[in-house]
Image (cartoon, rainbow, N blue to C red; front, top):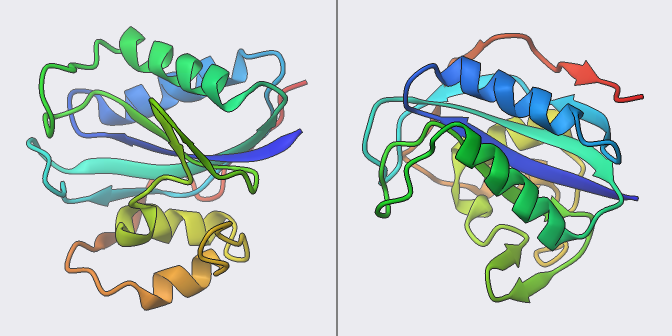
Length: 171
């Protein structure tokens, strides 16, 4: 099974409720195990309309393909009535595959690792909290190193929203 990391976020409606909904939906997938969740951070939107985001990073193990995972997370987003009318609009739920083990995937419709995660404080802060020693398969740097090297004006608020380092087992 591959260790998978996804970025989760919401800046529209019941933000915390949408994150909790996504967590329950993922836990209902039979082949998904060992879900771990970073703290949830409130962050200002970067080139996206709407108010502040709640952002986190989750990891889990699964034995389905990256394309099947993408299909599943898009189905979860659709269940929250996520608008997809234009770029940079507010989002009820945003689920992005950050890493799929150490795989590098460049195919139509799917790019892994996420191509801009190393530029995003709102991804690197929770990712470094969840697994600071995870090595980016292309950059060959840990999450801790990437976060230290990031010079971004778009920070995350120091406070967390919700529980810290939640972990869930799916039996």
